[in-house]
Each structure stands twice: as C-alpha cells, then as structure tokens.
Image (cartoon, rainbow, N blue to C red; front, top):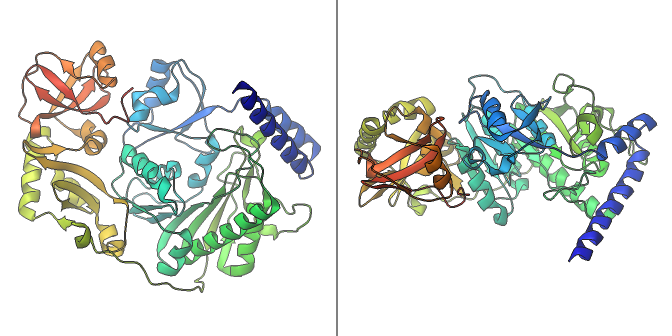
Length: 495
C-alpha cells in the first residue's frame, strides 16, 4: 500500500511538472519564478462565514476558541485563510451546523464578481452546482432573497448538494437535476444572474483530494471545451438582457478557459461583453491573448487567470459576462410534474394560523410575520410541513425538483415537531423555549448522547427545546423529559 501511495505521488509530481513546462512558455521569467516559489508553500484551508446564521465578528471568537491564526481573503469580505489551528476547521460544531463553509479561497472569487443591489430579489441559476459551496455563497450574497436554483446534471451528486443547502439554512432555494444545456431553451431571458462553474479537467497546478491532477488527453480536453461552450451558450440564452453570467473553471488549461470565451464572443458578438475586473481584484490577473498556437479575442484579457502565485490559491479561472442584447436560440418543451402529483398541497389557512399561535406561544417566534415579509407560504406533504418560496411556485412550480424551500417540521402523535433545519436557522431569534447546557454536558451532547438531569417539562411543541451552551452557541434541538434531554442532532453532525 505504501509503495502505491508513493507511485501516485510520483505521478502527480510528473503531471505537475509537465503542466509547469507548458505554462513556462505563457509566463515571463519573473512570474514563472514566483509560481515555482508559491508551489513550495502550503495551500492553507479557508473558511467563508454564513451571514444567515453568524455575525461577521464571530471569526474572532472562533480564532480564540480553536487556536486559529487567520488572514483575510483579499477578494472575499467573508472569507478567511486559517493559517494555523489547534482544532481543524472541519472539527467544530459551528462547521457542522453551517456557521461557515470550508472552501479553497480561489473558489470564493466567482460569486464575488457578481453585482448585487441591496434589497433586491434576484432570480439566480447555479447551472452546475454540486457539491454546493458556491451555491451557499450565492445565497449569502443575495441575502436568501429572490430564488436560487441549484442544478446539477449528475443524480449521484444531488444528495450532497441537498445536505449542503440544508445545513446552510436556505429558504429561497430549489434543487434540480437536469442537463444544464437545456435551460437556455426552456427559460430564455429569465434569470438575473447565472453561475456556470463548468465541469473541467481540474489542471490547477495544486493537486488536492477534491481536485486531483490526472492525465488528460487532447481528445478529452477538446470534448470538455465543446461541452463548456454549449453550457455557456445555454446560460447566455437563459439570462435576461442586462443580466450577468460568471463563467468559472478550476483549470488553467486555455482550451477550457480563454478559448471558450473566444468561442462565445464569436457566437454572440456584441450581444455579450466580458467585463473588466479591476475593481474586483486586489491586483491584475489578466487572461491570455494566446496559448502559443491560437490567438484569442483581446476581450478575454478581461477575465481573471488565477495562477497560484497571484493570490496564494489553487489555479483558477473566471470571467464576468454581461448580456447587452437578446440572443436567438432553440426552444424546448419544458418537463412538467404538478405539485399535486407528488402530494404537495397548500396548508389550509386555519392550520397556518394554528401553527403560528403554537410557535409564537412556545418560542416567541412570529411565523406569520416571516411568511409575509419573505414571500413564502406553507405547504404540506403527508405529515411534513414545508416553507416554499412563492417565486418557485409562480415561475417553476410545475417542473420536477429534488428539493425546494425548507422543512418547517412534521406532525406526530405528540403534536407538531419543529425541524432541525428550521431551528438551526432561526433558533437564535427565539425569545423562549430553550435550554442551556454546561461545558461537560456540551461535550456529551456533541457526541450525540442524551443528557441526564432534572429538567422541568416545558410547554413546547412535542417538548422540543432549542439547545444552547453557556456561550450562546446554538447546538440544535432536544426533546425534554423529566430526567433527560433526548439528543435530536442529525447523525451527520455528531462527533
């Protein structure tokens, strides 16, 4: 086994060396020297704060609690490199409950390129969304307003995407499983913002577990480039005139980067514009004018080519594209599956009012006010009650989906049981209905254990209390008995 690991490591080194020789011809001598120097440095983990659940200054508390040395990511206001740590970022309850997301800093740039107006409710498509990191960033930057459709063409990747969004605490989202190439023909001139984090060869000069370097043939590179062009063509067709597309890859192969943009400019001409990123980046990172054999449209220089030495990241590429005029394209028949066919129906107004009274009495949380302010409504399927965004119902409600909105809770023999996802997102706003654990109890709680002790049985829905520690960290929900609290943390969260 050890020999095999060494062989794999050698293969990665060989692939990196081959890639370096290729890029040596594309960089001047000074930049190439800087690149080699950077590749000898460690690639630090980075985190991005979840503003739906966490205040910006929470990083100071985490740094003190977990022994972190932090450095701000220069192009992402909510991003931080963790350069030293006593507790790894992936081993905290804050991470498991969605207070932050662990992400390569380079992957934070694409969503930061978009312009979002305060108070707006944009319609957003993440065309190739799984595993969901950039989708959570879209949700954060749009303040969970409007609607974010997270699509992925691979059914095998949908479960991971759904879990990431549940953990993040998003309400105004839907998860779909379609070929991204279809959206332009299904929904022309529809979306305000579209992210295409395109499937690519992952030739980023820094091999990691999630983005390993591997051999790529010329034929495969050409196939990828052709698919990327089709996906980006679909995105531009689906975009409203005046809207923005971000095209991104985690590869430095020009065939999948500048060449794709060059293709798009040839297809759409003046109907699209690659925007200058000077105001988005701390220093220049221009695209290439040529790959040594092909000259590109000069406009592709407006893209961002993130060689590792430029911002101490993995290799990455992205561009901000504005649609300046309508474009022509094929239109396809939209697949339909009415909500009634999967058993979803609007919750009766009388039941909505009863639920609001229950939650207002138990937790001091006004569900009616939230529903009115957020343009959502309650829907029921069997015993489960969901919060669904009205924009999905109005514009997309009859197309098949994998998930939409947020689970509020479900009816049981003991009454209504609030869902973990709902309490994790909104529990910090409750005025009552919570229990505080001491330090010893918290350790057991995070292992998934029930807590023994004398606890008065509160007048709560199905005896479900919100659990905090002495530092006011929200730790999920528990069912209270006279003698213990049953731990209701999902199994994926416990340590």
